[in-house]
Length: 197
View 1 (cartoon, rainbow, N blue to C red):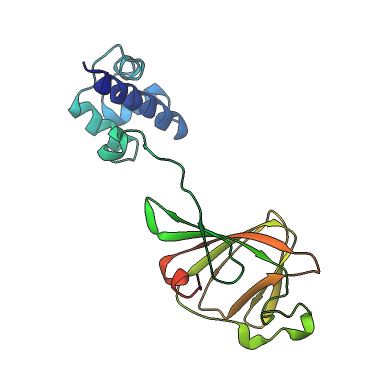
View 2: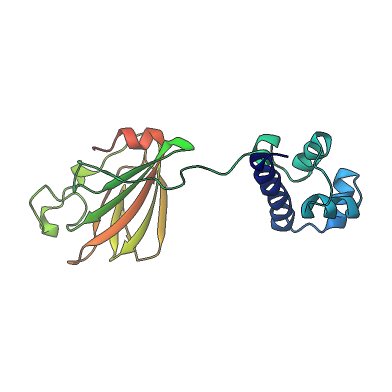
């Protein structure tokens, strides 16, 4: 067995055990689903028995995963660096490698929703600044309090709270108070098209 094969073999064994435990299955439970004995399953997980393709197919089905996912090698590059998003406040943007239709943004808001560029007072807020477009948005407030205008209502989103909404609702986001707020926003492809940057 080559070193590379040994590494993959070890990873698959760890993944089998981790998936079994994550699904709350004992060796006996998994044995019932696969028609393999608990002893065989234990030896497969610990490495004292060779992994066979037919067993891996049974195990992937029983563990509700694909064979590809079960035998996938470790990701080479797990860190995604940010790109400066030049729209609005120059926040940071990341595109997820395995889900390129999903974009993550980090933004800082210093004014209420709908405040024209350069203005900082709530009196300057306009309802015409609300936008509607296809898609969904999800946001997490990292610091401060965000104010989300959704149609005719306003929702305060406190630190460590999340808001999720369909973007066909007219919406605008900004700081709720005189203090800035910082948020992480996740957009699907349709919603991202409507955001500058």
